[in-house]
Each structure stands twice: as structure tokens, then as C-alpha cells.
Image (cartoon, rainbow, N blue to C red; front, side, top):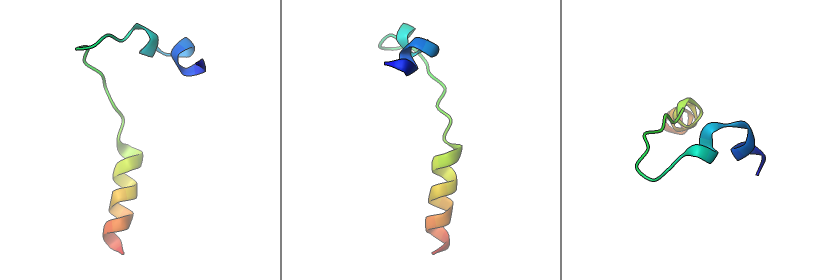
Length: 35
């Protein structure tokens, strides 16, 4: 897939540390919490 070609995901192996950006998810949860 395109993402594996243009990122380092293609080089990732089981046990590797990864940095996940969760700001979008955090904003979504914050909005749900305001309801």
C-alpha cells in the first residue's frame, strides 16, 4: 500500500517502538465528554 511505501511502516518489526499521534483521537474524546 501507499502508506508503507512513503513511511517507515514498511520497516517496522514486531517489538519495535512506535510513536502514535493521538491528538485527533483526544480531541474527539474531549468533544464527546462535553455532550
